[in-house]
Image 1 (cartoon, one colour):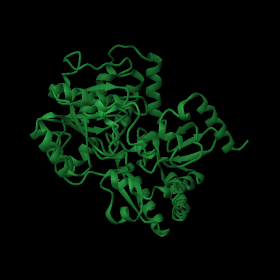
Image 2 (cartoon, helix red, strand yellow; image 1 turned 45 degrees about the horizontal axis):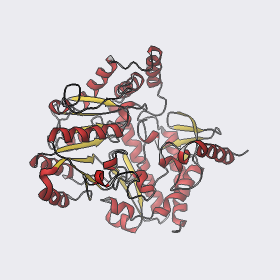
Image 3 (cartoon, one colour; image 1 turned 90 degrees about the vertical axis):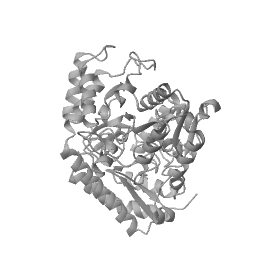
Image 4 (cartoon, helix red, strand yellow; image 1 turned 135 degrees about the vertical axis):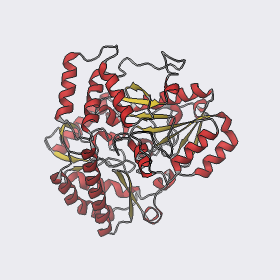
Length: 451
């Protein structure tokens, strides 16, 4: 039996017992075609599928594997924690240490509440904002994804964009009526919303640097404008750093932006803008199911048991997850970020050069060490500033590009609307394998035709 046969048989079995054969939609290869690769193991910059074939990984568990897969010290920390017990339903010292580590990196997160998923973090942040303000309306931006919270699935990018869905069945009109969706990077549109309904708005939530419609960084001053408008109208600003937090830098995108503006975030916080609430995930859990929210102490103290806003979770702050997160943050020093920035820059430049050589119109966009490719003349000419721009690209060029890379032993995100992720484990050999695969993949993209 060939590897393809093995993968197809396994996917057939999966579809018989799991909806769509996967436990998260984009894993199904719906936008690129073919059967997904079932992974058996991973180490460093590599994943190995169930047939034993190895690939250089540019998904990295969708971001958490900043240090590479199965980093020995992270695995050792989890194993040690597991020997002490898998879950207690009681406080642990590791929870305190991890919250302290988050606050050290992001001083504006004066207090932190841990949950199990990014969706829980954003859901809790929204509930907290409504409880703090006594208002109902939440403003989000098209193409920004904040988990599968009912009210936030409108124009949510990522998997929703991949499958061409406007939202989701099962989300009621009453729920979506409390969400206002605004074009990303459009300050004037947000000003108009506040002018009309400012007294009703509890919060504005935004990805710190969006990476769920492809990488579409905020324009200079955009996040600061959000801070100015929310403060002027008594609304809260929620900065979703589930993806960017502790990945694009030690203090996430907020730290990068503050440093660029001359602020010393490690001491006083960003001098240009500071949100009321942050949401964290992915890297903060080191590859285990853990996320969190943090912010000003007086806001966070509105959460139960100290306040009236209820939130709970049996596995929140799970000892295995906190062990992985704490080990990851302790290991993620300046040298790690320098390496990830360097290899991400090398690969991003090489992607652009290969597509140029093949005559493929495109734009590679970056937000720190995150980047993605947008295909098409409009993207090449004007860049991509919004979800509408991202949707207008030549998406038909991505499937052949993806499969050519996969055939060459390089696993890309199976959606054109996702960021590429590298890690401190991507050494020269891994990077060379990526660079060697790019010319053929670029030619495949050039030969692609719309359906």
